[in-house]
Length: 310
Ligand SMILES: [Zn+2]
Image (cartoon, rainbow, N blue to C red; front, top):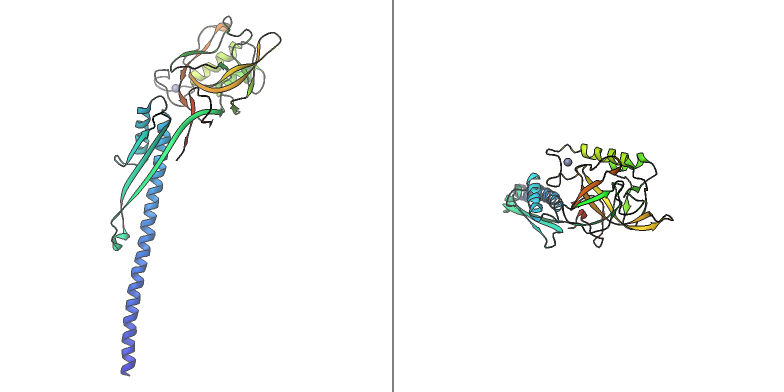
């Protein structure tokens, strides 16, 4: 009998020991699952916030690297990165914004195991490159040239002052007719146009549809003050994306018949100049970031696409 009771006592002891070990293993796992999850959650939040910050920053490149940095900081802040947690840089060629963020996290259960805090960090980079292919262009072919910011450029000429006899600068995109042409000005031609594409020209002056299209664009700007070259809002209807072109074919009459796209540029319009048949569409050249396919080696006419690259 004595042996049996000793045996039972020992067994009880063993159970307690086994239970104690099991409990601490369980606590360890709980710590692992909860705190590791917490760490990953914070890491993912940091990466997402940093991605949107660098993407917001590059929208201001290459024109204004200082503003690019400010925008990156603003977006980081809006997305919950605290001041002092992040830092951003613009590369020397003003083509990319990179950022890093570090956060010290207090742990919950892992304190049992002696870990009070952990560090999470993230890095991200976005860059711009010339657009080689895009949708939404307006049907004006602008002869390829290197423009500077704010330069006034005639996008479509009126009667009497054509650079090319028989061509006012209009393009035939997606069909003939004044209404197709007008809608391409109002809403942008919806199909994708790429560098190398050959586009037919529209030989008429079409001052009525041109005016209707441009006035629609001007009226759709509801920003205060209304957008001008001095201050404009990204995405405004007054910003026109146009193809830069070379004359491709001359018809029997000696007039241009088609043009070849060599790149893309953006212009801001803030008025419709002239009267009737003699009206010009004049835009101010801007550096701009829009959506589209980019090519690192594409011709650079100041229109860029942005993307994350790290
Ligand atoms: Zn506007």
